[in-house]
Image (cartoon, rainbow, N blue to C red; front, top):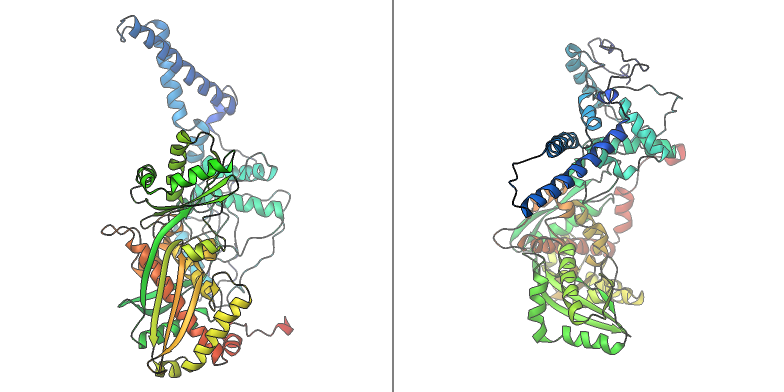
Amino acid sequence: MEVTRLSSAKSVQPLKPAKAVSLDEEPTKASDALPLPLHLTNAVFFTLFFSVVYFLLSRWREKIRTSTPLHVVTFSEIVAILAFFASFIYLLGFFGIDFVQSLVFRPTPDVWISEDEEEENEVLLRKEDARKVPCGQALDCSLPLLPPQAPIVTAQKVFDEKPVTVLTEEDEEIIKAVVAGTTPSYSLESKLGDCKRAAAIRREALQRLTGKSLSGLPLEGLDYESILGQCCEMPVGYVQIPVGIAGPLLLNGKEFSVPMATTEGCLVASTNRGCKAIHLSGGATGILLKDGMTRAPVVRFGTAKRAADLKLYLEDPNSFETLSVVFNRSSRFGRLQSIKCAIAGKNLYMRFTCSTGDAMGMNMVSKGVQNVLDFLQADFPDMDVLGISGNFCSDKKPAAVNWIEGRGKSVVCEAIIKGDVVRKVLKTSVESLVELNMLKNLTGSAMAGALGGFNAHAGNIVSAVFLATGQDPAQNVESSHCITMMEAVNDGKDLHVSVTMPSIEVGTVGGGTQLASQSACLNLLGVKGANKEAPGANSRTLATIVAGAVLAGELSLMSAISAGQLVKSHMKYNRSSKDVSKA
C-alpha cells in the first residue's frame, strides 16, 4: 500500500510492522499432533460413528425383543457408547480439527499496524481516497506481475481504489488448489463457511488463471451471505449500476418516485419529463386486468387419442375442483385459476394459470403443476412427462400466447394530457403525436412484423425498474409487451394516451427483491415485502407503477421524436465530452 501520495499538512510517519512474519515458519496446528494424516483421521472417526450407531441400534432392538431392560449394558456396549460420544464430539466440528484450527489460527488484522498508530493512519487513508478525479480514471486495470514467490501479507484495511491482495497462508494454499483444479471453485462457500472470503479467493484464483485483472470490479460492500443459494453462484464481485429517480409519478391519486437503474443517458430525464406532463394534467389511472402466473408442462402418449382424452378431462369443469385441491396444496397463496391445453400429434401441452400473492411465482406454480402431474399419473399411467416446461408458458421469450392470454399482471394505464402541457412541456402538438404514433408504433411495427412491440421503448423503462427493484431482468422480454395508443380528445385540444401491457411479471418477495439495494428501492415505492392485509396487493401496485412509468417514457420519447429533439438531446447528454483524437 503506497502512502507517499497522501496529502496532509501534518507529517506522516511510515507504517512500521509491529511484528515481522517469517515465511519459513509455519504456525503450529492442532492437527500436527495426530498420529495419522488429517483426512485419514476424519475417515476413521466417520466410519467409527456409523459403526457404533449401527451396533447400538442392533443391540437395543434385540433387548426390546427379549424384554431385557435397556439400562443393563455389557462391556462391549459400554465401549460402543464411549466411542459414539467421542466420534460425535469430533464430527461436531465438521470433520473436527481442521475446521476449528482455521478459526483459532486465523491471523489478526493488526499485525502490520500498531494499535496506537492504527486510528491515525485510517483517517489519513480515508482523506486520501476523497481526491477528485474523473469517474473511473483512478482505476488501474493493469494486472500486476506476480513474482515467483509472492509475499504473503496479513489482513490490512484498504481505502484506496487499487486492489490490495489480502492473503493468509491458508488462503494461498486454497488459491493454489483452485488454480490446480484439485478444489472446485463452486465448493468454496461450503468448505470455508465464509461467503465473502470464498468470493475473494475465487476472484484471486480467476485472475491467476486468466492473467486478467479484475481491479475495476468491486468486491467490498456486498452481503455475500444474502445471495447464497438463491441469487448468484460463484460470485467474484458485483457490477455497479447508477440508480436515478423519475417523478413524482401521479398514479391513481398517489405520488410515486420511480427508481430506475440504467447506464443509458437521457432515459431517466426523459421519463421524468413524461411524469411532469402527467402530473400537470391531473395524473394517470392504472387498472389491473388480470393476475396469474403460468407454467405449461409437455407430456406424451402412445396415441393422439390418449392425449385428447387427457385434454378433455383437464378442460372438463367437473374435474377442475379436484385438480384445484391437488394444485393448491403447494402453497398458501398459489390458487389455480385455469388450465388450457394444446395438442401437437400425440403430445399434449397443458398451460396452468394461478395466482401467486406478492411473489412473482415461478417456483410456486411449478410446485403446483408437479402435484397435478403426480395425481394424473394414477389415472393415466401411460403418460410420459417430458418436461415441467414445454414453452407453452411462455417464459423469457416473445410469444403470442402471452400477448393474447397474458402472463403475470395484465395492466392498462391511461392519461389525458392537456393541450397546453403538450405545447409547453413536451414542445410538440397533439396532432403531431397522434400521427407519429399511428405511423411509428402501429404501422411501422406491423411492417416489421413486431410481436408485442407496438411501442416506442417500453423495454427501456421496464428493464430499468426491474434492475432497481430486484426483478428477473430476463423477464423483460415478455414484460415489455406493450401497445401505445394516442388519440385527440375534447375537440382535438387534448391528448388521450394509454399503454396496454398484458404480461408484466413482477414480485415484491423472493429472489433479488430481498437484497439491500433492491429492497430499499421497493421501500421507496411503498411496496416492500408481502402485504399482510391483502396478499398480492404490493406486487399488483408495482405492476401498475411499471405501466405508469412506461406511459411517461412513451409520452416523452414520442414528443422528442415529433419535435426533432431526439438526436440533439442524446448528443448533449449521452456522449462523452472527451476529445478521443487525443487519446
